[in-house]
Length: 549
Image (cartoon, rainbow, N blue to C red; front, side, top):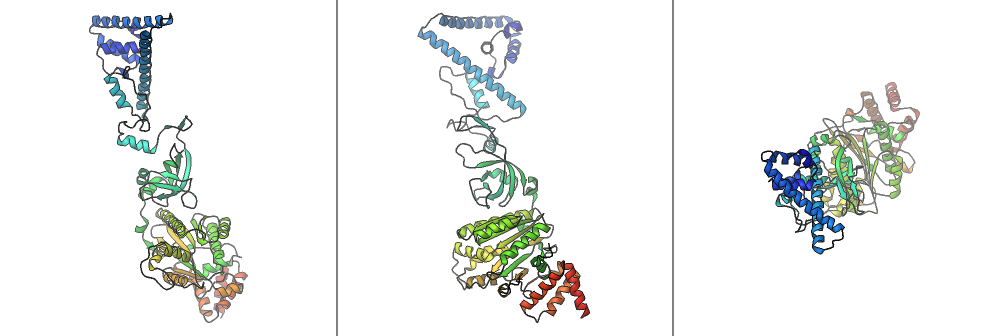
């Protein structure tokens, strides 16, 4: 047979010839490949090939004759049914051939073919067993279409869970996966999956779903700030889904895989100073640098009665840190505070303000505080310096006292001893890490409120910190600001933070003013600070004055 005669035949005729010759899997060949296959099989016996060709031509002529008869007005029911069946069979074969070619192209390019929605053939035009088996092996019907679809393999299930290239939307159009940028703080739930929280670290409608496989792959934990690409929720889904991760806490995802857990990091004394001095007129921060210096990894407590200026002092500390150390991560946590103070803090500082106002339930306070702690620990694990300003730890302990199961014991003031464990865990997380990274926590504690519980909470936390700054109500009533009680304030191991001349000057001041009253000492120091431009000049003047004496 000549190759030209075979090329004149349609794909259906060539498949019929190939089937009569015993060629298997005829649906996977294209027209050119099928001609070559027929030519190879028939090269050994030309008589047989000619006989098959003649029989196929007779069949084609009969079909064409029936079509001509229909055009001339032959409306017999039997002929109509046979012609319709032939056309339906031909369309079905063409559709399957096109699907097969598309699957072969995707297999060559390395793409994963998605389960295709297809119609089940009727009994009259059902394909042969070979064709049916081939279609079953190469395509799977979506479970959303049929309940008895074949089970997916492990790799296909992973691809199906994480990403699908095209999906039918409710409007009837096919929508390609979205690559919208998503960002949020991860919260891993007990079931293994998680969500990226955006607003105040709490659940909301803008949360993004994170699959368990992604959490295990990148060693993600609660508190990680993740930036990546997400897709639009499909029909029946409530949240967006994270397609892939770009950064974890500002670094590459590979960094998070190798990090050491916070519990296994070695804590040491603070040995790097955080200088709060910014402008000559900011006397509060200048005084703190001299009397109670703060280091990276400090666990400090600001002890204050009501209306002594603790919130203003926290605000000035936050502004000084963002001015002098823009690379440090600053988080201000406001627990059980007034809403107007939250707004003022958000507008005053250039940092992250997380809050839970007094009109929220105690469970809300606890959830916010625990998320902030996890967030800070994840940053420290990646060797970053973090500062958390908590206002106040007394209100946080009160919230835990209302939510924990009672232990059966009660301290004076109605405080359950078990309520102090979680606040101590929060406050005790502050530490300086040996090989890089630090978590500094400055927390306020309330005293002289008239509540015995507040005094008990302060007494329990009194020995846990390594820096204390006491504010005096009498000084604030006299309008002496900052109202710092210099005799009670100080830092442990301050020699690691102060220079030798500064240390000598501060010790000389404490010795000389030990017998004086609190108001006199503070007022004298403030007057001397006003007369000098910076702390270096102040220390020099103090040393000269004591040398002359």
